[in-house]
Image 1 (cartoon, one colour):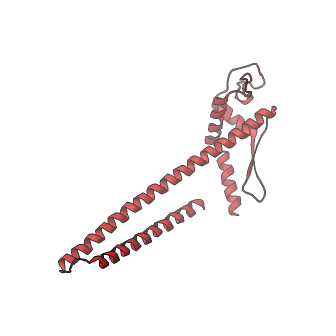
Image 2: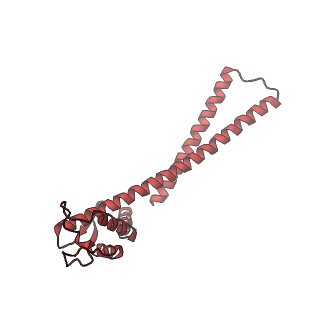
Image 3: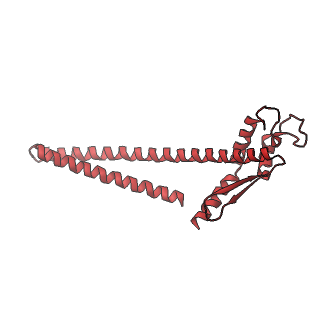
Length: 189
């Protein structure tokens, strides 16, 4: 059931106007169906039935045509979604499906980068908090030692205090990692 929901979510993303706009913009930038740059991609033409026309349609019209020309079909028992484009010209159908797939890939990469950046910023903030906490704890220990008249730590005691500090830092790091993984798991759900 989790895979079915994931596929349904991905298909919903594929059907968004944002993705259609990205694909339409990529097609407009490409403009031509052939490498000789003589045939404009039919879906871009103001009147696709008139191949001699060079007037381009508005982006909203191209987006609507894309929505009509594309179908998204989940493959059974897998996490693959097939993108099927229909056109009177096989070259255009292939170009539409591939352009849409690239736009989807680019959007997924952008989201992944945003999520990674957010996670990094969160972890950096927690690290700064832990450093302040450690510094405060060390200052408290030092103040206590001075106020109680304790002798300064010898080499062995100093090593033990450093090891304890390192263990506490490791524990805090693992706690942060667990919290991060919990957030990631909840965002995936």
